Length: 138
Image (tube, rainbow, N blue to C red; front, top):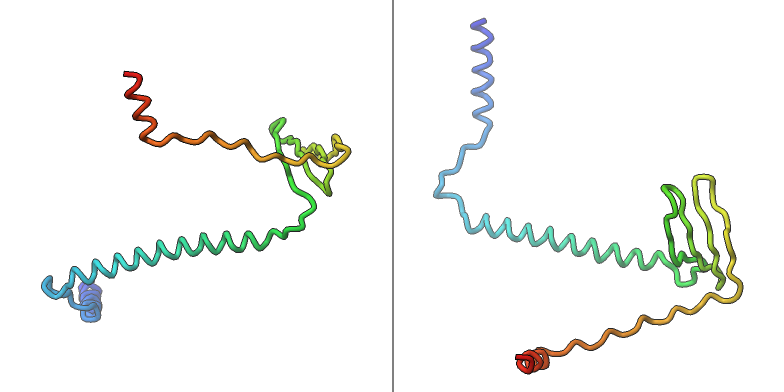
């Protein structure tokens, strides 16, 4: 048993010789280390923004402008059942989707209605107008 303990202590001393010696506190450049950490953080944040920008660019390219089918609206009517309103070649289709498959419920004849732009929101008054109204009330 004593031979095993002596062998282990010899191995432990060998590992201690391989480990680098700890630097004294005076040799550590705190400002340099802080700058290195901050630059690394800025680089990681920049990579995140670049990845987001790149993914948006690639998604925009994957959608060709000449698509003939698009989903206008979707509504869940049950746990696993949905109703889809599709625009296909200028016609509107109402399609039911469920566990049993898909079924055309209705085909709207004629051209699909052109969606109007939403009405413009009223202009927000500037701070001077708001203050004059507030002073007028009191």
